[in-house]
Image (tube, helix red, strand yellow):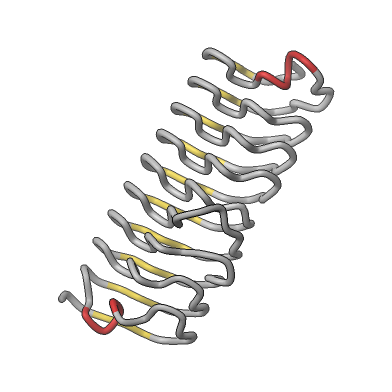
Length: 171
């Protein structure tokens, strides 16, 4: 598979059936990078990590279902179980359990979610947000350009669709 490493049931499945450019890619775990057709330089480690990726490149997903729904987004990094699970955009970072998970497949660009459930409700249009802290930004859906720091800040909990807000502190 052209300088790639694949290990696990149905991991990199397309690489063995129809893929001609499964390059510089590592797939380790059940159905990890299962649909990858021509995405290159991806790393998927964990049960169904990057499972739906077909053409996205330079993604790193470590954890159960991390970046599971990504199809063509590139330059994403997900670390933690379900981190960025439904994300299909580009240049996003999710670190922590459910970080930036979203509730259905969505596309955003340039967002960062760090912490348990940080950015939990992200959806289309939730671009360029920086959300750091335990359960921070759990109600944020389509708001963009927000900076939310701290564990469960009350002022940040009310931000759902607003843009360019700053929320700081604990509770």
